[in-house]
Amino acid sequence: MCGIVGIASNKSVSANIVNSLKKLEYRGYDSAGLATLSNNLINEKKCSGRVEQLEKILFKAPAEGNLGIGHVRWATHGIPNEINAHPHSSEIVSVVHNGIIENSNNLKNQLEKKGLKFKSQTDTEVITLLLTEELKNKSPLDAVHETLKKLEGSFALGIIFKNFKDMIIGARRGSPLAVGYSTNENYLGSDSYALKSMTNKISYLDDGDICVLTKDNVEFYDFRKKKINKKVLLLSDDKNIAHKGDYKNFMSKEIFEQPIAIKNCINEYIDKSRDEINFYNFPIKPDSIDKIILVGCGTAYHSCLVAKYWFEEFTSLTVEADVASEFRYRNLKFNKNSLYLFVSQSGETADTAAALDLCKKNGVKTCSIVNVVESSIARNSDWVLPIHAGPEIGVASTKAFTGQMLLLYMLSLKIGNLRGDIERKYYQTKIINLKKLPDLLQNSLKTEDKIQLVAKDFLKSKGSMFLGRGFSFPIALEGALKLKELSYLHAEGYPAGEMKHGPLALIEDGLPVIVISPNDKYFQKTISNMQEVIARGGKILLITDSNDSVISENIRFKINLPHIEKSLSPFLTTIPLQLLAYHVALLKKCDIDKPRNLAKSVTVE
Ligand code: AGP
Image 1 (cartoon, rainbow, N blue to C red):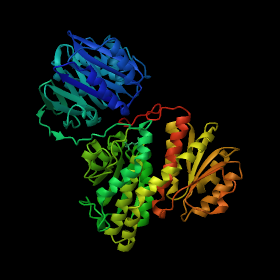
Image 2 (cartoon, rainbow, N blue to C red):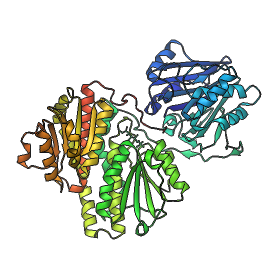
Image 3 (tube, rainbow, N blue to C red):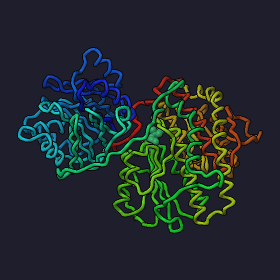
Image 4 (cartoon, protein in one colour):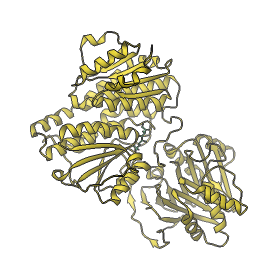
């Protein structure tokens, strides 16, 4: 992960570097740093912790200079302390890096044999020292080119040179990097989001590319050092980006934005007058699709798991869902008639991007479901379906999850309809019901008061279990993931029917067990599983839209959801689980938007 920014300007750059780093904190926030050039010296400032900390350091000791690079880190090699924070500088060169240098140990041994000394435990410092060696007899561009040849792994780099006071070099292989343009100022950034406050004109580097920026000019080279041209893209104007408004944090804002985000997405894709879902330009004719393969990580993977049930219900197709980090290394048999769907909020997740590349290399058609349309995954796919959720800043994914589910729901219905697997009337009834979803989500958010009470139970508990069947099983996994990442409490999601095959042994007096049981075909079966848990002392939080009075006995809390057609239940059952994770974390005084050890965009394997 990690975030990179670089600015070449005719005025002081450190304040703008700091502002961009704040936007990049979603990529990593365990340490931060910058380096500027002034008075023919590399001026390096860095610290462990947040960009706020760096700002304090700069307040006391400003970093002068019209050229600089900055970095926010998500530690891979070496603990998150000041020494391991980027930039990593020698006397003549300073480097910021996103990615992992896989052969760093070998390179380090070689450099140490030559008598070079390392200050940090990072893989990045080998780049600094390799460059320092190459610069003895080469120009900056040649030195970078030679150094890159020695590196294995993935990287996006920003580099400045003591003796070149108007030059930043950027390079990418595997990790995203963008260039931004303005008057008397040019920029380097991990993504467009970092640059948006400074420019709306950007270009993306492709794998192997190198860029050389000065304040007035940008040149691009391919991996052979041949000069190339790049398309300049105009970014959309996202004025409402990253404001919490009256909310305490981004996560609560994003939870409460879900009705409107879902409404926007419905408006984008549904022709309300004809009750029709508008998806065009299928990369494979729906009739010819023989299989659907869904790939994602974390929460995005959970949306794939829910979608598996929908595709199986609305189409006659075989469906598989896989986590990207497994998919990319499996011995897969690719099939030109299978539709490979990649789900990612950020569109930058390294494992998902690699899984997509693997598909492309094997000549199959790919479709991505993303929130960030300018992302690498979107740009590399044959077909892109944006979820239109608006920027999601909280590390814990909320509105992107419901947006991903919505897109997958509509896609499964549309494919079912086009293939003739479902009747037109059934299809249109589903669309009519779907249009009610924003209001029903709004009502589900009213469960917050009760959830606040429930949250207190979790403070004393060692762990918790989330159970569900059918669509509610992946929702149980998602509920457990949210609680883990936000409140650092152990939580396990399980298919309710599997409890008796082992996990029932975990149930002891007072263990919170969240049972997700909408009034669907699994209802009675899940309730029986719940009784088995109650009999062993489990403290139940039941989430349901059933009014069945029998089930209120021996239940500690019951969250009543509005009635909704069965296949849409995952949208509503998700809401109290997001709120639960949020309120437990709030009571535990955890950092809601930036949970420990995590990052919003996971750009390393
Ligand atoms: C969710 O709350 C997570 N923080 C995480 O699991 C996330 O969904 C995952 O890293 C995938 O990210 P993506 O959607 O940007 O690809």
